[in-house]
Structures are given as structure tokens and as C-alpha cells.
Image (cartoon, rainbow, N blue to C red; front, side, top):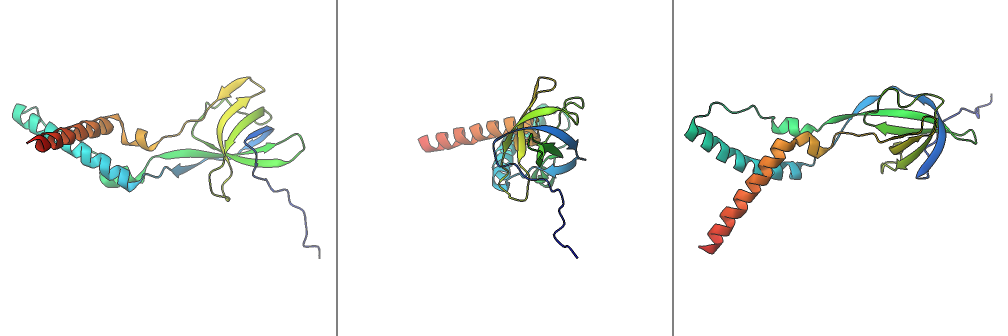
Length: 179
């Protein structure tokens, strides 16, 4: 019995630039962005100082109830983004697999399109390289997939509150150092 049967497996490209034809866009799946706990603790602590000041002002002015805030557990979980495996074939007939992180317009890529990809290694040899930029040579479109980041997950209001809390803490520390 011949156990050395040949199966066409997809390779992970090693170069930074790959020019190939799209064979198939696989079904996507969600992956979570990791949120570093030390960063999250610092941001929430600084935001807590500003939140306490805001509650004090609201209590003095009796402005009403505050808004609901996301829990530490929800913030630590991180945002999810879509990962779509993409199969490509280069001019030599080699089959490659890369990952598209985030969303693109539905009409942006189709099987048969000739593309030039800028890739980034993900640090794990088991994971296919991640697409940073796509030049669709068939339609002459430049595409950049976008994913949620830790900062977009925390949100502008929480980050602004953390900056204000940090300024309050720095002001209090400066005043106590002068006296």
C-alpha cells in the first residue's frame, strides 16, 4: 500500500509581498483582541477618580442618575474581530493560505481576482500571515482591513475620563508636594 499519497496542502507565504489569484474566501470566524490587565487597571483607576468627581458634581447639582458602566470582566474580555482565511494561487501554481482580519466591503474581493498582498507574520508558526494591505489588480482598488483595537474597545468616553482622572491625580500630587 502506498502511504506517500500526494495531497495539495496550502502553504504559508514567507515573503512580505505576495502577488496571486484568489481561489477561495473561506468562512470567517471570530477572534478576540487581548486586553492587557495592567493597562486596563491603570485606565480604570484613573477613570474612577474622574468618575468620583463627576458623581460629586452630579450630587451637588442633583442632575439625576448616572449612566450604566461596563464591568471589569466585560472590558477585560476584549472586542472580537472577524478572521477570514483566504486561499490564493501564485503564478507557479502554488497554493497559499493567509488570514484577513476585520471587514471589507462584500464586493471588494471575489474568487479569480488578481491581488497583491502586503503580509505580516503573526508570531505563531501555526497561524497563517495576516493581510495588512490589499491591492486588487483586477479592479484597481486599494483595500485596508480594519479591526477593533483595545483602545476602540475601551471607548473615547472612558479614555477621556481616564485622562481627566490622571490630570486630577497629578494636580493633587503637585499641590501636596508644594505644601
